Image (cartoon, rainbow, N blue to C red; front, side, top):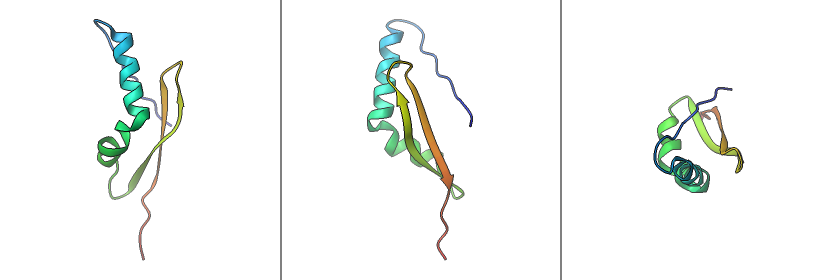
Length: 68
């Protein structure tokens, strides 16, 4: 497991962080980001856990299934 931390700074940074979190959990993740993170070997599946208070998101990946 590896963790990436995003820090929002500046005007209304707490509000911007909440908006980003909501976008990620609410579906923004599913289209572009998952497709861009997946490749021929790795299938990035999506959000498996989230915490509304800490604004933490857990994303899972699996080996890409090969067809025979």
